Length: 174
Image 1 (spheres, rainbow, N blue to C red):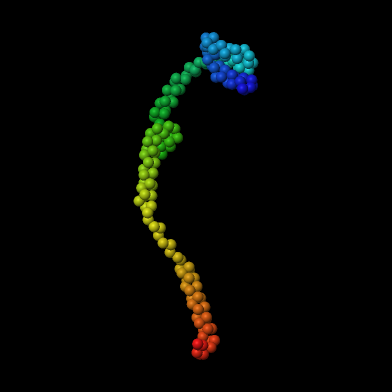
Image 2: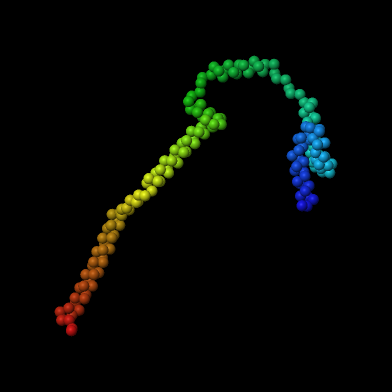
């Protein structure tokens, strides 16, 4: 394995352990190979330093206090929502379909799919041996067949008439 490939593998495994190194000071002592890699790799050590700086800033940050009227406004909104007219059936169904996880629908959908598969398989099994219905020709096709048969009959009649005109009265030679 080349040094570049080994270095990338080491960097990848080191970056997976950066959170442990950041949160637990004893973790670096337990894993000296990570400490050696951080000493040799500038990118990984810089990333660890940036994470430490970010955590230092977050340690000094204080969340702002909520407004003194927050609770009063929240209770007023809750009273308005409770006093509001209930939603219609379609609106409740729409919100249920849009915002639910579908845990209640999954068994029903699975049952419906199984029923469709059984019905489809049964219809193939029971109806699979039947012959397809004969194809009925249209009246136009039937008329064309009759005309074709008539044309053949006329040709045969013409051949008979032509052969009867050639010495048909002469007795056959024996």
